[in-house]
Image (spheres, rainbow, N blue to C red):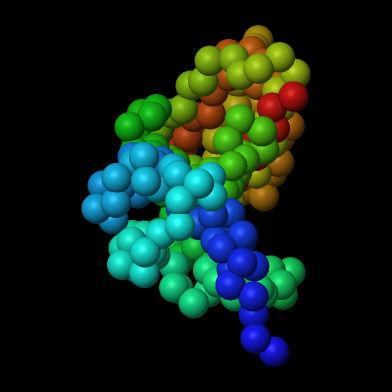
Length: 188
């Protein structure tokens, strides 16, 4: 069955915007990567302008998405989104002697965040209070850590899980050497 070109043009803006957000890129970043102006990218995403094949090609290359895949009318429920180890975003400049890998998708920031944190010996991550009612759940994957939440302190070993308030000053510190934790932050 032949597809109506109007259907493709209706789906294209949303698909491009989805692809950009899935990569965690701003309009400016896509413009820099593709050579397409920021205003044109914005107009295309809003459905106010139809891209030329050349422009669409540049955008799909910048977003690292399949040109044909943007136009298909596929059901996303039978797909698995994979983020390879080398593609997982990380933060190396927060805390002391720790590396934070961000496992949750960018659109979850400020809501439900998931992290894999590796501490070197004497590594620590001290945090200011998050939003009122925020909670953290931490599971120790390797080593041992000390968790502080407000005035409370608890020592945890491999396999232990702690749940604590994150709307007060709180910290995680490696106890007796390197450690690794899985952290879930849930903002209220």
